[in-house]
Image (tube, rainbow, N blue to C red; front, side, top):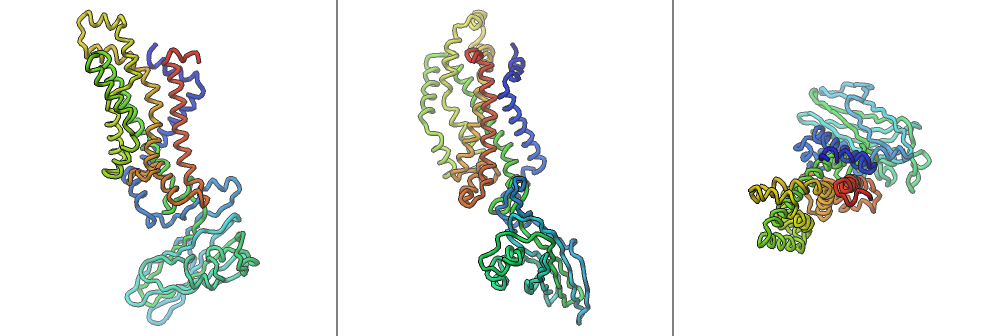
Length: 449
């Protein structure tokens, strides 16, 4: 029976087909990640910090939370193009007063916005423009937000303005401005926002003929994207998507290299026997007593945390010796008639090993190769959780480490840990199901189980 015919037997096992589906899903995720976010762009976005992600809310849950009745607000961005000029009045000295109205709907009842910020860009020579802000609620209340001097470009943190907080009764503006009327005057704070249509009125004063002002208001919500955001406003979906190709590349590189090495070195030791077999066996026992995780931790702490350096160290560790399981199989196969026939017609030792011995047992190594992949993926995640993950690459383990360091579980950001943990779990289960099915197919003793 050919190798392809044996692989086709996977269709007899529903669990194996589920595992194949998981593997195909990971491959599709990897392709999409590489196309949507090229390698250099993904690293730039992930390492850029909060300033690149200013339009994203901080610690926002995924949007699908609202599918379960949460009704949490999404982010609202009021760009300059969305403003409607109500009136323009000429002032002395070439200046002018312009009244701009921004209107938006707030239909959510499950929570208040996280923050409110106004970004501005102004051009002037000597006298900076000023803006007088008013807030109008759906029930007709009008709140004076104060006056701001617009110097070049910057950001007005309306939610953190101490003067405004004091005028609103020592309550956060992003809550008080959306509060219901009866609760707006209550020092205890509102419980539910007032849904409806809100208005932001901006009276812009310029004092020079060539002076211009552009305003962009962002009302940060509590949900964002399909994976949410972290404490630096980064979209977690980038790490979840790029975690797939990194995990597959790391796991398959280590598993394939070490599986082929164990097959080869164990075959050489078993076939030549004598001091060669003794040396390979002693090296294997030496590797078995050397602690892998502490070695990788020391490399990460004192040398480099690069994922590829860790991979090289892992492979170098595995190259010490072979596999006792493969050695036992090779020792039994030494006396097989077809090997004796090859020796009789004058085939050399290396030809026998690489042409007749190793290929015979190669199918038996396929299940071990598939099952070894998730173990190396979990190893990378474990190192990242210990703070020794790659400082550049966005991986599942790095997301979990960031969430753990920020106390995500203690403050209710469960999605931050559960999503990458689910990706690791699904990956491990998928490869394990395929590996177990392959073990039954290629191992005659397990075919009847």
